Length: 234
Image (cartoon, rainbow, N blue to C red):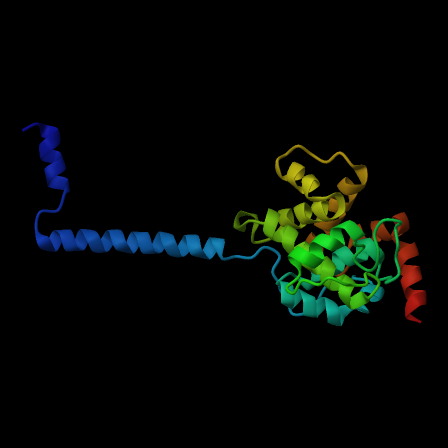
């Protein structure tokens, strides 16, 4: 018998007791690996950190819609601060906002609305009014949740900064923009570049007392949306 064969025989259990101990150890290792894997994969990117909007710098015109934002955050398991950030950049809280293509608080296009209504809502609908604040917020939140589920992975946690950027790029420029960003191909549309980075930075600044990124957005023209929203709320 070769030295290698004798070494292998010494390594393997011989008695029933040794085999039992060997099997128990292997089982413990497998269970441990399974638990760790399950814990990683059970994490939901951008899930609510709180039951309501907590970012101090979110404008009052967006916090005006806090109740439906909070309700949909819970319904679609997505952070209310992230919904508020997207609403801020899309409409500033102005329910009648119209870009010429997109409508309402979350700036939903009619084409995207059809997909949301039939595929992404908890309960699909055939008829809807995108200028109805409650409907628009749910449509926007459902779409954000879909994009989160498409591009978010447990490896992006626990900060979810990358998830926020990918979702924002997809929300503004379409899912293909998010895919290109994820694959390292970059973004071609300048507006989507600015939008996704603003969302990324506002998300990172959500716990701060102020947001330099929000202030820059406001000064670049966001003030017009905020002013329109304030007049509408009077």
